[in-house]
Amino acid sequence: MDEPGDRRLAAVLGLVGAALLALDGLFDLVRGVIYLAIGRGIYAFGPFDQAIVFFVVGLVAAGFAFLGGFRGPGRSVTAGVVLIVIAVVGWLALGFTSGILALLGGLLILLGGVVFLVSGR
Image: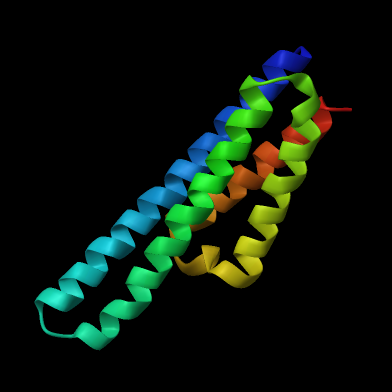
């Protein structure tokens, strides 16, 4: 593949990973609403907090994946480093291992970051 094709592939991987994180955040939000509906309001705080974190991290990852893949070629290394840092910090501190969608999203974000770094050589 050529360098623009590599950057597009990395952007698609990052965007799909960000979408999976946002989808897991949506599921957590629905779970929190269900807890509120059945009268267990104290248990709703965890899913609501996790949903906000997943939405924000997914939005940041999608932004850097878009900037690295569809803007100039000079941004691919920066986008790759940021996506790798998001994936590693997400696994270690933000709870990406809490569900299969978040785990797959983190893995795709990590792969997108690695492809960005390889295409920016």
